[in-house]
Image 1 (cartoon, rainbow, N blue to C red):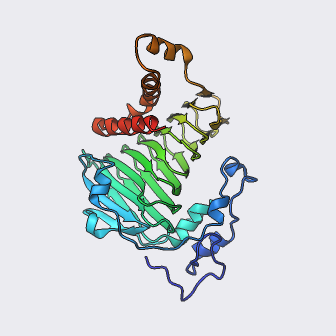
Image 2 (cartoon, rainbow, N blue to C red; image 1 turned 90 degrees about the vertical axis):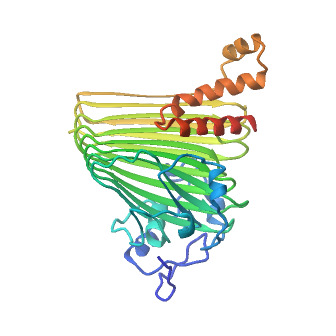
Image 3 (cartoon, rainbow, N blue to C red; image 1 turned 120 degrees about the horizontal axis):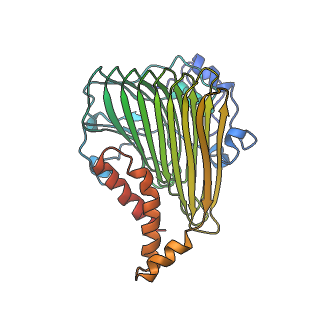
Amino acid sequence: MELTQTTIVAKPLPFADFVLPESKQGQNFLNLSFPTTRNEYWKYTRLGKLKTAKLKISQTSNITVETINNIVAIDRYQLVVFENGFLRNDLSDLTGIEENNTLSNKLSNEYFTALSDASFTSGINLKVKANTVLTKPLLLVNSSSDPESISNINHNITTQQGSEAMVCMLDLAAAEGSGFLNSVTRINAESSSNLEIVNLQVLGKATAIQNIYVDVAEDASFKHFGFSLIGQLTRNNINVNLNKTGAYAELNGVYVPSGSQHIDNHTYIDHIAPNCNSSELYRGILSNTATGVFNGKVMVRQAAQKTNAFQANNNILLSDKATMNSKPELEIYADDVKCSHGSTTGQMDKDALFYLQARGIKKTAAVKLLVTAFADDVVSRVSDEHLAELINAMIEKQISEN
């Protein structure tokens, strides 16, 4: 989709030097205010540097298949690559996939979703046909290679009745600097389908904000794994509606900020129908002066009897200067439910560390062993064993370097 400046919304973006095409989506965006920490939803994430940035639309093409394979060398079904918000046809296999070039009919009140809806340059429409089982993951790359670029990407994924698929989403920054990757993914898991999303974020010094919206139908299963390994400022918003009886959602994450990096995970699971289950497990490993945020809310509607919902957020601080803000929430209006949530944040287990050192293991190696085991409780849930091994190796490397 080309951005036209022949008919435009008059007000420019606060942080970019292009203006929006005239549309109801553009007008909707202009009615929204740039988020600040006065907004509870953004209380712990400051966006001042983004607001003062001057970004642009860029069609720079620097990403190669070798660059991608150096990070995610997996046996895959297909590869689809977007660079700076534009489809790389030369690197992509679009068999059975359409490029998304149609504005969404939905008008969001979330600032960055509304921005992407109004100005996205590309994305995919993926439909996994009914009763089809994809035995290998589809690798979907959202990349930034221009440090002054803004990338607005909009994906739609549907798993039709009885189908099964895994999508590995790689968010990648391949340039030094503060480019901005803004993505929206809308997912529809139809009845009795199974979809697993594994999201790897290797974002250098870039800023990334992603919004994922999921509708889960009767007896369908949706699993999401978020691994935020590198990124100056990363915000992940995942919103799941369990719409029909028997729907299941599982949200998992590991985040490993270091230096002055900031990683914020916000999740919202809405139990709308009865007899639905959800599970969340997020683990953070923070070092140096890094900051982390976890805000997970589970809503149980009055009609959602026989709900089972579990939520846990556990964090290890490897530095006295690292900071974690954790806020698990439950809002329950049904009577017959089993729900639990909890959060822990603390230093490395000194007894366990002493035990390993007493057996001749050096302190740095002992720390790596304990932290890797801590993360593996999440990583081991990834169904593709080779991908899980690769992620574990990436986490080990990140810990070793800090």
